[in-house]
Length: 218
Image (cartoon, rainbow, N blue to C red):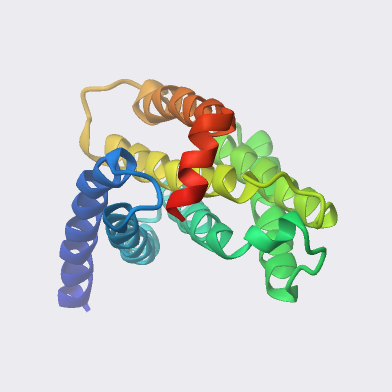
């Protein structure tokens, strides 16, 4: 069993470092181009492997924070990837039962975690629980408004999901490895740096010329 956890740790480290270095590459590539798609897929699968191995590792060391950040990272990576297939919701009101179910379960899990964080006064857990619950709630609201999405809503979701997954992964790395950063900055700094970047990309996508260029590349 010890060998299994050791191998799980090595796999987690390899996948995590792959995601750390690949994400900026994908972000800098021309959106919708072959290089962006290729590196985006590498990032997605790296986050899936890193998240699943983190779930195993969190159970091993009994860390609720690492467990939640793994769940959050997996959920957001799935949200970002799935958004690529939800472009038709701009004109089609039909939402798959799978999408409704995932968002509903996500809302229940993250909302429950947020409530627990208030009771236990666990700030770190509360931040990701609250962000996860807000994301899942917006997803459900968006599905209820299917058929009336703006043309680029799927792209905004794609950016938010992948960036949030990356932020969660970096936060977990910071807490476990960057011991010189004091609490609560050790888990907050990736969010404080990442959220403005997400907002910048959202503003850029909403600009007519940039949005048109991205759409033509898809």
